[in-house]
Structure formats: C-alpha cells, structure tokens
Length: 409
Image (cartoon, rainbow, N blue to C red; front, side, top):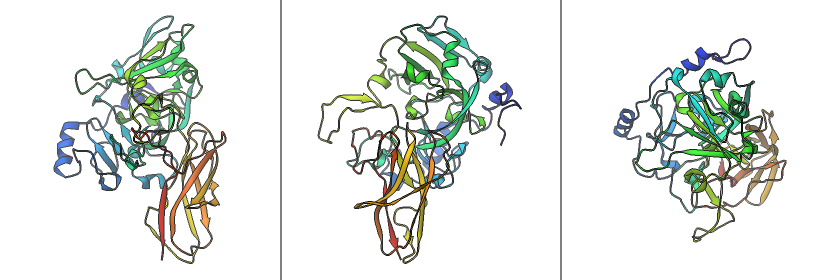
C-alpha cells in the first residue's frame, strides 16, 4: 500500500493531489444500472434483512447499497470479523446532500473566518504545513447506525449495524489550522461546511459545529489520510474533519469552510436535527426537550457467528467480536444471556482510546441452544450498554445489547 508520505512521514503534495484520481462517480448512470438489476429499492427498505449486497459501486467492494444519490453504503457485518481496521473499500458511506464527483485539489481552498484575528484562505500546502503531522485510530459511526432495528420502527435510512468503521486517520490538528487565522477571545464554537450542496431549493446547507474545548483537543484533526492513503472521494477528499469519540455527523467531508463563532450555533443540523430526547420517552410522547447528539456510547458485537447459526452440541465454543468505548476507554466486555452474566470476555490488543478492541470468550461445553446471547461493553467511566432499547423517534445513538440465538446440533 502506498502511504502518500515521504521518508520523514510528511504528506507529499503530489500524493495528496493524486488522491482524486481513479474512477469518477457517475451517480445518475450508476443508479439506473442498479435499479435495472433490481439492487435498489426506491422506497424505504423493508429492513436490514432484505438488503442485497452489490460490488457495483465505484471504489468499493461488496457493500449494502441503501441509496445512490447522495450515496449511502453500509458495511456488511462480516467485514468486522476480519480485524479492527476497516479497509477503505469496505468503510460505510454517508452523505446528507449531493457530493461533487471530482475535486481539483490544486485549486481547493479552505476559508477560515468568523471570530478570528485575520481571515485566511488556505491551500492544501498551507494546511499540510500548519503543524505536526499526526495519526489517530478512531471509529467513524453514523448517528443512525442500527436505526433499522428500532422497535417500534422509525423513518430514515434503515441501517443495520454496519454504518460504522475504524480507520487510521492522518492530518494536522484543527487547532494548528485555526492558529493560521488566530482565534478571538470569547470564541465558543467552530463551525464547518463542505462542498456538498442541497438537492432541493431552500433546503439547509449541511454545516456542523463543535464546542471550542473540543476543537482544541490534540486528537481532533483536519485529515487528508485514511489508512495510509489519501482520502477517497467518497470519504471526503481532499480534507475532512475527524472528531474521535464523537458521531460522524461532525466529521464534515470535503472541508471548504471553517468559521469561529462567539455564540450558540442556530444552524439547522445543530439546532434542529441530530438531536435526541433529553430524558427517556415512549413512542406515544410528542412534546419533549432535546439535546444534540455528541459523544458515542459503548457498544459491542458478536462477529464470529450470525443469528441462527448452528454450533456443535457437547463441544467448546469460541465466540469473538469487536467492542468500542465510544468516548472513553473500555473497562470490560461480558457475554450475557437472557438472565444476565454468562462469562467475562478476554480483550485483545489496545489500539487506542477511540479504536475497536477485539474480544474472545470460550463456552466450555454447549449443552443446549444459546438463546438471546449478546455482549455488553462497559467503560472506565462507568457507562454500560443497556439491556433495553432507549427508543427515540430518529433511531439515533443506539447502544442496546445486540443479541443473537445459536442453535446446538
């Protein structure tokens, strides 16, 4: 794999600009092809179990295609059984609005303005020279991951649990880029916009913001690299924001604007959308306060066996999978059954605070069926996956224990 770095680890301008090469995305043509093949259902999908895989999307391996334009591609769960790092060609894709099908890197600029001492327009070279080049291993997860499993069902993209992935992201710290313009006293938030544009007149632009204390963290990046390669076009080439531990709605792609604010953000996708009830509700509740989705909660998944798989009766059974702490380190992962704890799991190597960790557990003897088993993650801060779904009308921030049934034979 070509890293795009020189011997000192610095990004080479040639490699970054070359990242826009490869197959161009011709979304309307591709959409018609997949519709003819019966791959795409133009209506709301019937649920995760009814979505076929296709290898037909440019730059991707076999994926679950939820939508062509803007692209919504889901990673099959089998990919997560292959390791903790998700390959670029199997990473899920989520765009809110239409994305450009090509980007001229040499002409690309990032405008940094708002409450700054001197607004600037930065080239890719300017960004690359803003500070130390660093790499952070972090999970990128859609806020709606698992929405298609909600009960009662909710509207929106019917994701299974494959709207997530973990990669090694490389770039410079956002705070070093902000230093190019100088942040004014009293700054409260930093807002981002990309090159994607609404499909309908009057629709809100997709812009997001994060609090200043988050923006100034050492691990929040303006990233150009993904698993040692320039960002693929589908994942935000040439630059994207990376906010480890937070949902990917804040990881703005094809970054074009950085704006420093001195007040709360009243833009649509912060003030009105990507919000959850401030307190637990029922599906019958209509009026309730909401809070913005921010940090991810802990989650864990069995990846070695699918629901309904047959296992050998009277023999040991080893299960494995992945777990995440969200915005905190994992403390433990436990195998649980219908009546509570079955066995503690052994955690694999720690690849970083915001990365997946593998886990394994061996059941000494499978005497009967294993109904509704799952794995429960807990963090060092005391956050634990709940046994019951914390339902909300958008299906956001799902982290209920995911369960399967194994049949002994």
